Length: 495
Image (cartoon, rainbow, N blue to C red):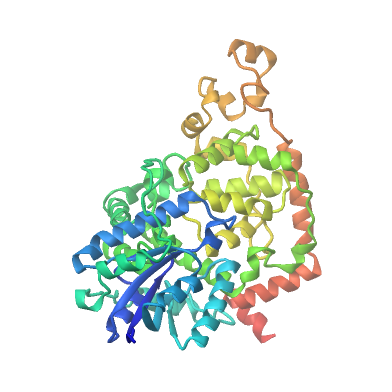
């Protein structure tokens, strides 16, 4: 009878990097050899929030890690199955002592998977050690001192992992394991439109941003075309863990000078807000399906398949809205203001429930991060009760942020030959204008599917009236106490 070797496993999830990775550090610090594992879970692959662009980014990230791990005669075991099934199979070859991973602020499906894995570890005498991910804390009841704790985490020294071949399960052993698993094919088709996954590519974006591109950051952040170059473009590398927030935070601080202080300070501020929203979702996971403010559960909106299809396809008759959606569908990236515009237009102008927008947007965002996705959807839909009601005017935003229609011309090319005023508002063309420009509204480009002015007025009246609803106000109080700590919330706590 062969005695199975006792090993430890690093279960990789949204932490696809080799440095500043505490789970790997703890595993390397143990006395046993370690196996790095990534599981392409069938339940997640089939989940409506994900799409092929996400899995390709992850595969590219794993290939990038394997390129570096090859120097230590190892690689990541990547398998297609469910997590418990993967560990059951591994126990045929090894005795698993400890599993190391980061806490995941994910979807309800991953939360339930983790609860199942806790039971599995308990039943199989396996230790499971989870580390804090990017300063987000589990089990908080309120935000007392949270920002200070997050700042301490960000300013702590980065974790330096030193890899040694003798500490790692070898490539040859992993190849033998692959013969018994349904292993994942890490090949991806080349698509230059999407950002490529991996730490090396992530640092290329970071270095070009910090060296040059940040100089126009604040000037162009709201502009749909110029922001594609002037913003960091680091969100997918942060969302999938190619870079840690701490690595990016410290790099920005180290390079901040008087000449770039405004731009890099604004960038650092957005890193804090990113963590804030993920922490909020960690503490209120029901936000995945329902508004955080229970007072808005009574807000009923009729679902229109016609409106939803037009919005998804970028054929609403509002050029900036359509350009934004087509750009997102094609490239996986859109600046924050245009993301807000898409949600505001869908939930306010089209008067559709935000839940009907969530799946398409999550599938399209290359940087899909549940902890950002759901809080932002609800904030832009004005269903938190504590944030300002913002009903974006698509024409005003078009004129202010794409004044020369560069973005619209690129993504709605059927409008590019029209005079500039008609590119922003093609529906203003008279019959004579259409004849003169050889253009027919409703054929060459859709007529507006709603009257934006009356829709905005109706939405504003309903939403502002709801702000005075007793349940909404009670929920405001609860949310402020739980998720912020300002002078107002201190006062509320002491009443």
